[in-house]
Amino acid sequence: MTAAPSSQDNPTVLNRKKRLRRLILFGSLLILLVAVPVALICNPPEEDAAPQSYFYVTRDGEIIELTSEGVSAAGTEITNSFEALGRSTRSGRQILEKTVAPDGSFITEFRKGYRGAAADNQNEDTSSPSVSKRPAITYSIETRNAVTDEVVSSELLFELDETDPASLECVLSKDMLLFGMSQSRDRFFWYVKSDGQWRKIDVDFGVDEDVVVLGWEILKEKKSILFLLHSVFKYPLTPDNLYASSYSYQSFSTEKTVLLPHKLESGNAEMRVLNGEKHFIVYRNWYDYVSEISSIKCGVFSTDDLTEVKEATVPNASYSPYYDALVMSPDLDYIAYGNYFDDGSLFLFDVNRNERTLLRTNSAASYRRFLADRRYLDVEHTLSLERRAKRQSIGFSEDSSLLLAADMLGNVYEWDVKKKKGGRKIVKAKN
Image (cartoon, rainbow, N blue to C red; front, side, top):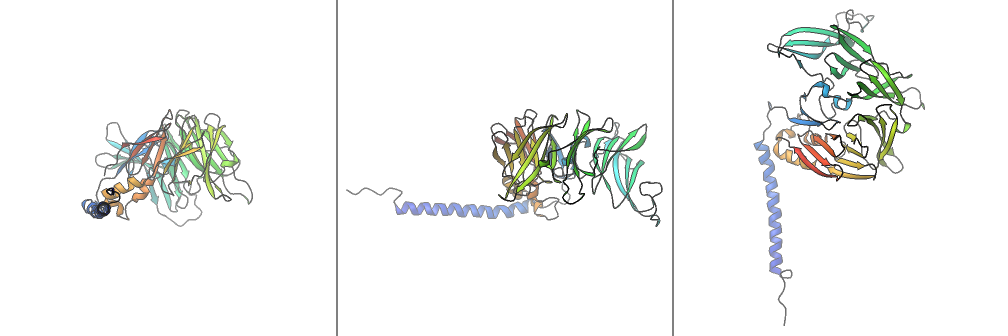
């Protein structure tokens, strides 16, 4: 007796399944083709649209709300040069916020202007604003009426030649401003107000060679600033040096400067203070030309005496400075980093187990926003959608149990560090 054919061998059933799969595939393609034009039509670009709100995760795991127009939080929240240079905040270097008087009647802010040449005199001293006649950039503190916007007073701090401008690096208070030279960043100086008068204080790092500032971090509990210094080019075959310098902003003097290990020496080295201010990490790219593999070399140091307490290497890490984020957990067991120049993925590296875990890619967030906001197709838009999704800030909680990350689309994520799982979205972008 011949057995009846099963459904798997029945040609009629197989043909039906093939037709069903084709129908599902065709339907999916049709939905995609319809969804994209509909999204673009329903979300036209708005020229006067409000600035897109997004968030920044500080080194201490705190979430600060920002806008595409600049930092909305107080300028004193900016604690390191990574933030001040606008790599994730996009705030630019001029970060002094408008200070409003307690009664709300006056607004005080830092102003950067331009003064044209008054006469052709090549022998004038540009460091003296009272006699300089050549084109110059002016740096002032301006007070305006909060209602009428009328300028009530303007205090000139200093002038510099337009070919060698300065930038406002950080603001400890409205009476303590730290400046650095924009081009070489080899000269830093304060302008401090006391008894109603502004005075200039030059920063001396106590190093017997010319150095440039690669970065700085404010240590609020210690009332000091930590600087990362790199020696400038001197002679061929002369080794470069990398320094860490602790500077007191109470006494306006250098407390200690140490030479860092040669394995970290690089003009692209970076520095981050860890949550709790007990340690800081210095890291750099390392490329092995034999194996053609990139890695990140890291050194961890005490903020008390600047001595090295740990070293680590993140293998097979495609990392590039300037636009990437990297931070270490306070317990020194984990390193989180993102690679902006590749696909913008976020990784968690277990230092003790030498294991790397992929936490997040930017693809899903990019596609969702693409269907919801046509403005990102405009080439004149401030940042492209892909760049916004890639650019992110990260920080660990004080107990090292949580990792927080925020992108420039308005999303904030949270992971359980021990389980290396989560990715829970605690703040969702508003389309």
